[in-house]
Amino acid sequence: MKRWVLPVLVAVVVIAAQTRMYEMRADEPAADAAQAARDATLVQTVLRLKGIDVNSTPKLRDAVLRHLGTLQGKPEYVELVRKLNVRGVEAELLQLALQRPDRTEGVGAAELLLKFGETDRLRAELRGDDASQAALVAEVLGRVGTQSALELIQPLVTDNDAERTVRTAAAAAVGRNLIGQRFLLERVKKGQLPADVTFAVANALLASPDPRLRAEAAKHLKLPAAAEGVPLPPVAELAARSGDVALGQQLFQTKGTCIKCHKVRGEGKEVGPDLSEIGSKLSKEAMYVAILDPSAGISHNYESFTAVLASGNVVTGLVISRTDEQIVLRNAEAIDKTISLTEVDELIKSPVSIMPADLQKTMTADELVDIVAYLISLKKKG
Ligand code: HEC
Image (cartoon, rainbow, N blue to C red; front, side):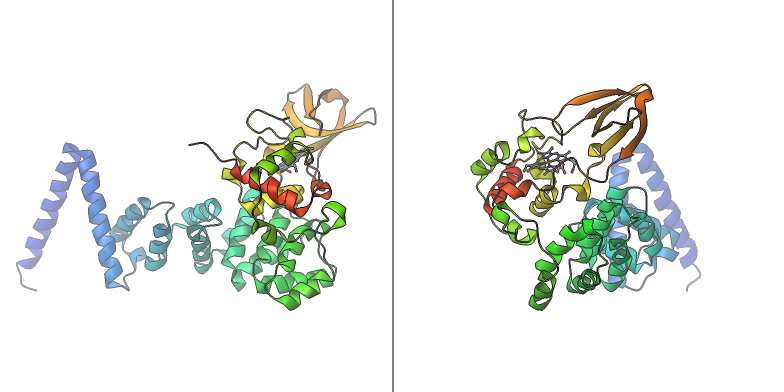
C-alpha cells in the first residue's frame, strides 16, 4: 500500500461521518432514508460477495439488522436471515412463526429456528403456560415436517400432562405428513392414544395419501356420525366441497341450533363468541374442527367452569364477571346465575367446551358444508 493511501482513507471516512452528522441534524427523515439506502446497498453487496460472516463484524451486523427491521413480517425477512445466517434474531423468528404458522414465512422462520439449534427454545414454548401459543408452535412445526420437527411434537400427542389444546394441535400437526401418520397409526394400534385426540388423529389418518395406511386406520378409527348414523368424511374432504350460503344461514338458525349460542350481526344469543366476522378469522378446515371438536381449542374467554357449592349443588357455565364477593356464571341456555363466593367451595376449570360436540348428529354432511359456507362468507367489512 502506498504511504498516502491510509491518511486519505481516514480523511474520507471522517468527512463522510461529519456529513452524516450534519445531515442528521439538518434533516432527520432524509438522513434516515439515506442510511436505509446505504444499508440496502451494503446488504446487496454482502449477498453478492458470499461467504462473509455478518455475525462477527459489528458494524456490518448493525447495518444488516437495520435492513431486516424494514422487512419485518415479510417473506424477505426470513430469506435474508437464511442467506446471511444472521444470529441474534431468534425471538423475531419465533414471533413470525407464531403469527403466520400457515404461511411460507412462518414455516420458514420455524425451519430456521431448528437449523440454528433452537430446540430448547421451541420445547419451552411447547411446554409453556400459554396453551394457545404452544398449539401454534406445534402447528407450525407440523408444517415444517422434518424429522427434527416431528421429534419435538410427537411426545406431546400421548402426554396426558399437556393441555388438551396442545395435545390435539400436536396430533393434527404430526398427522400432516406420512412419517407422522405412521407414528400415529402405531399409537392407535397399541391403544396408546388419549381419547380426546381421536378426532384429530382420525382426520389425519383417514385422509392419508397412502391407501394401505388409510385402510389400516379405518379398522380402528371412525369419524363422528352425521344424520342417520352415516360417518362424516374427513375434514380435508369436507373442506374441498362447496356449499350453499343461503341454506347454510337457514340451518344455522334452525336445525343447527347455532343461533342459541352465537350472535351474527346482532341476532342470536351470546354464550359463544360473536361470529359476525368469523370468515376472516378461521380457515375452512379450522371451521370444521371448531364445530366437530369444540373442546380441541377453547378460546381463553370461553372456558367453562364448574362451581361446587357448599350446599352440594354444582353450577356450570362461562365466567361472565367476577369480584371479591361474587361470580356470575352463564350456562348453555344463556342464563346468568350470580353466586356469592362464600357459597362456593371449589371452582374447577372444565376441559370440555360448553359447545356440544355432537351438533352434526342431526345434520347431513351436505348441511354441515352449507353451514360452513355461510360462516366463511361472514367476513370483516372493508
Ligand atoms: C350451547 C352453546 C353453543 C352452541 C349450540 C353452538 N356453539 Fe359454537 N361455541 C360455543 C362456545 C362457548 C364457543 C367457544 C368455546 C369453544 O371454542 O369451544 C363456541 C365456538 C365456536 C366457534 C369458534 C369461534 C372462534 O372464534 O374460534 C365456531 C366456528 C362455532 N362455535 C360455530 C358453531 C356452529 C356452526 C354451531 C351450530 C352448528 C354452534 N357453534 C353451536 C357455544 C355454542
